[in-house]
View (cartoon, rainbow, N blue to C red):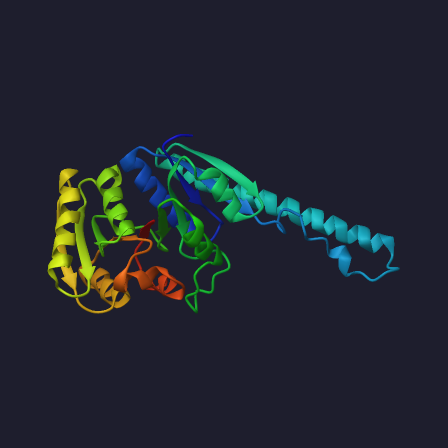
Length: 283
């Protein structure tokens, strides 16, 4: 499958949002969607042999029963995985989007590494099936994917809403330039309202950087407003998204100066956690 995006679905609340966002992007940019569900090694049956907990001399019938339980659990996980993919494909079929399912056993990161080579983007939900919504915890798989994926990563919010206004966080770093370039080249963003902002001091260097970013979009036929915000990036950007009703945030996945801290260690996860709209990270 060429010209594809990979959508990771796990059966959580966020899976429908991932599918809805994938359908939106596929419709705008004529992408095909590869739906991927990964069964962990324990779900697949490997490494889940409960018989090891039975002491020497236990009856063989009990060992056999535990082995059967392992096998049943693996079959149930497989059946569930297929059902998750079938439901996701039905959503995309209903939107008229080309898609196919890929069920994989093993480690999520290994699965992505094997499949992402010809993908344009990877989509993942902000939280997974086991996330603690009360405490606002992010999915552990999301943190791993953010750190290791080489592709642009689209992090879906809990529910889909039509995207009309896009905010690009820009600091002049290489990854920020690549984020602007990605928006300029992608049919996804054609015709949408775009604003590019820098967080920090109102300097000539900041103004020039914004002018360069605006020129890159203009060359692609995209109009964009620019602005410089004072304060800390995670606070200023979050406030701007909330107050002015942006539907989507685009950022470089690493940077320099004050924006760099957004994507190093826990601060990056804090930004993703608090922002209520989908985020595209470009490395």
